[in-house]
Amino acid sequence: MYTKVGEKVQVNYLKFMDMAGSERLDKAGVDPMSMLGFQACYINFSITTFTRVLEQMSRMKPVTGGQDLDKTISWKESTITKMMKSCFDGTAFSSFLVCISTAEKNSGESYHAMKFGHAASKLKSNVTKPKLIGIKTKIRDQTAELAKIEK
Image (cartoon, rainbow, N blue to C red; front, side):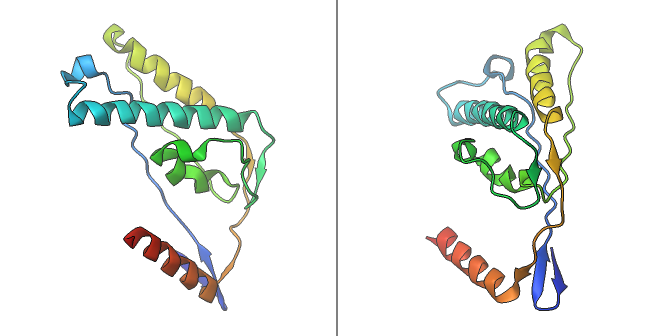
């Protein structure tokens, strides 16, 4: 969503990410060598990577609105972290809802969900309004991104 302010725009996003918890192949009855098995493993990898990114960010000084994020953080390791990067540059409010189960058979998943929630709870940022971007610049950037996607 864009808010026009004179000849500039403010870009607003609303992102929802349902990470669906860890995928236990044995519980799901999925063959690890199948496409579903591969997808389940990739989901686990992405969640683990995102948790590691949150833990790295929590050990750093708070991010101020729009500043470049630390280059040592592994944002490019998974699709989730690439998609969520803009939520942590100090121009966004981020909230997490972590669901766990009290059933003993789900203790492993609940442990990792709580580990993720703990990492997220340690994040600190000084949220400010997003920078205004020139309309022509935004159109040029969007056109370049579209061309890149089409390739």
